[in-house]
Length: 363
Image (cartoon, rainbow, N blue to C red; front, side, top):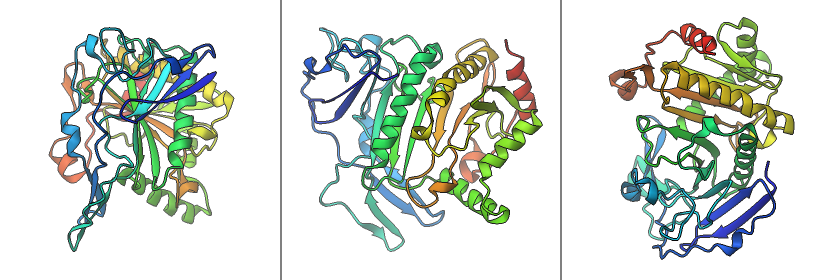
């Protein structure tokens, strides 16, 4: 749980926030000693009229840091030998603006407004933050204590509230990528939070489905009904406690996919009460350990929070975590090949009920 919150500015003007579990630290005494260039301007959003979607073009991200040695890790605490992104010599949980953001509020004055009559262009206004879960470079989320997970949940809530209030933000998306197989470029345990300027395609599809369901059922929430049906069936339930349920979706796209949802209808992370925040960690840590035990080695995964949008359709949301891996066997990965990448049509190699049984059987 957060006992002290300290915001500072890095040498290039980006914000960094320390979230301490004890109130004794004075973070202001550790300034950023680096000489950094100014942050890059924000990305472009280009509209694809063929599929009614916006695509971000962020060329500056080509130069982002890629798998540095551990003694040059930008997410470790600073040392006399190396000044990292975190000036302090230690920390509990910390967030800061990404040095190579996909979205930001730094808009160029000569921003292009159109490429053709059908392809408008707009600035990628938003915000991208990095969340470091621990100062221990060699740890990972599954090794955190339930108390630290509670702190992280509080941090996600803090950042969701602040980022949702930024001008032009349509939705806030906390997530974690783990493993080089997924595409991780920094090995230090960390996640990210994107504040998008548009509602993402996946969320748009979910909102359309939820709106149709509400219209047909007199206002019922689609995710609440799906969750209730899964709990009643029990076939794909992995684990549960008083406040959360973890289950394999009946129409899973990924070989091993679990959704973790609060049993109470909650719109976003800030709306979770203290009991729900406390109860999340033990359940989530159990699922992560089951993932690693599947093939007796670290499981690459994406852990993605789906929250209600900030504007129209907000009432249709239902907070839930989607955890999935591209590993389909001990020595095989699922690649998004022709059907998935070109057509957006997923083909799963593992029967969801079999995946659920396998995860349940792990002790």
